[in-house]
Image 1 (cartoon, one colour):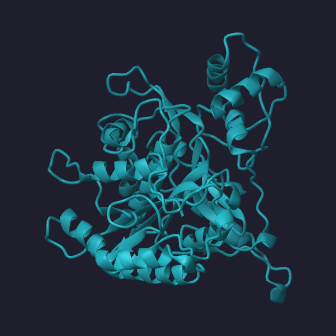
Image 2 (cartoon, one colour):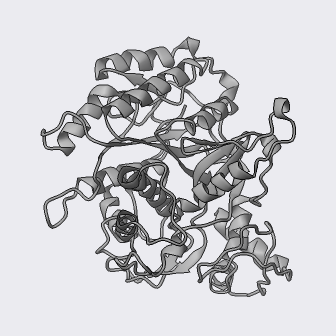
Image 3 (tube, rainbow, N blue to C red):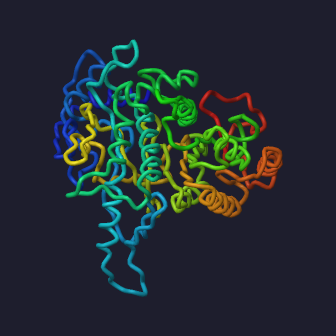
Length: 453
């Protein structure tokens, strides 16, 4: 196991350097931190499990996790171009025609936007999950937390709009508090880790186990169908998990079928509305060990969509929530900090614990270093917004040189034709892109090899 090997290396290294990086259990973090430093972890004969416990309880989770993610960085350079953060461009680049321009406003705008996004991290001290003894999700819940962040942004956009920023000296919006309460760590909270695990049993979700993006997307689809005590759906929008031909998760680019999207909206409204707000989730596998380079520009472009909700992804065994790009950099929110469970009250004046749901450390990793197994999210407020999304997605597919991330079709029958066209000889795929793989054999897969492109 990757995790076991990392722990063994940590134990054997006997690192003694210390760094003033962000704390684990309180909510204050510095704006900039030094990546790659480690706290001392004494050698123990009891093996790698003891090392994990020492790392977690000793406040060294950040340094441990960097051995999985690699050393993240926090520097931001205006020479690397403007930053796209979930559909919004923050202009910090220095244009040659204007010489030395003041980019501080653009950077400040980016920092405020970034720190207003909801961060959901590992928690400890919550009620045991189901009939297990687990009171923390440390070391296994990062994909669940990443997915919670993506859905939380969709809810913020839905309730407060994309331009909302967390106020500093003013009372907090009630809608914002309502969103946070949905992600509390108890069965009483609709989108808690407890309820996600229960909803995802059919897709292999289990306490203490890692999960892939595809199973995570399908889990949200199941959870969104459940009604609350008032008979209302917990998610105020339809959800559409975009897959390939028919209901398969194998082979070819996924197809956004307009008829299917319309059907999801109709089902959500019980036939009372032709269209409703819509959350689209697109699970993908964009290579074997790493993302095929041809997809990097396409991934970067999705952050320019006004409907962008970012990417659930990261490194193997270490999921993050990627929310922005700057040239080759991917900015992300990291769920791997360990924080004590908090109970968000309904008080908008002085709610306790809300600062633990935000971060002003703007970390980034190379976009081409992320795991090829990922899921992209989009939020469409209404039919016009969905039509605009389809227009931009179609344009992006046309610019893909025959290897799109996903395509758009009006109907299921037309999507089959599109899928066949995309998977033909005109796609530009080369044999060396996927060595040793028979692209026509759908049986050489496992549960998480859903959309290998």
